[in-house]
Figure (cartoon, helix red, strand yellow):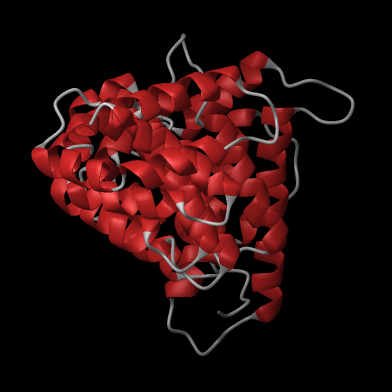
Amino acid sequence: MGSGTGRRGWWLFRSKVRCPEEVVRHSRDLLSCVLEDREACSNNHDPKREQKLTADVRKSIREMKCILYGNGDAEPVTEACTNLTKEFFKENTNTLRLLIVCLPYLDLETQKDVTQVIANLQRQKVDSMIIASDYLEANKDILDILMSGYDNMEIAIHYSTILRDCIRHQVAARYVLDSEHMKKFFDYIQLPDFNVASDAFRTFKELLTRHKSSAAEFFSRNYDWFFSEFNCKLLSSPNYIIRRQATQLLGDILLDRSNIPVMICYVSSKDNLIILMNLLREQSKAIQLDAFHVFKLFAANQDKPPEIVSILSANKSKLIRFLADFSLDKEDQQFEIDKAKVVAEITML
């Protein structure tokens, strides 16, 4: 872009002390300029202007962060945080969307500051209400933008971090759970970049465990395809980390009282039982233990289908021998009680 003094935006660079509302408005104006510059197809690119604009965005985001978190000498002031939050989520303004869309164009330190600012704002109350929830309900497309971040390794972790802060609100979590995005997690979790894959799994777990009622509704509506993918791509993954995380998550899901109907359905499947029995044979004690916590649900089911009874009966002696030798490094009374109950159930078959 040209550097003529008549160009829109140069007035933004004047330095002054701003109140919280002005800090937000200033940031919004700067981010709009960043977006305009990126979208403009101009041969008159001005590196100096871009550098100055980037520096001013960095400074403005730091101002917001300082108001919300305080600095080394002072704690944050409640009134200032409230005023900043009100302006940030003000109706018909796009501050959050602008921050997210512009994130790829900011330097690494500013990206980190943005994620911290957004995390704080998701928790801020105005008149005892967390207004971020209402904003997200009216702007659900922001969640689509964040999900698309997994396709860009440079911003994936930042977008994933922001997404987890957004799905603290049930309205946002429900939107993602009800979308086609859920199917994509099975691919994101297997990405070759370990950090991005781990971050994707963390978000996946949060979606399936934080809001109990929404998660239970999701499982009831999507049982067949979800657990088919879960068993095939996660529990049967050649990657040890994925198998371990998935086995633990499966236990978290099935042992939650909110998911009793899902648990009953899961432990009535012989294919699921075979997968769990294979996981019990893993060399990893951690996977064995997590698998045992799910396996005991199959054994404890008082309405076992005939095919479940048949498999357990055929493997009775092997299972009893395995459980006799199965122990933990530390004494765990509840584990021993559970193991004794499983042995008793299998013995009676």
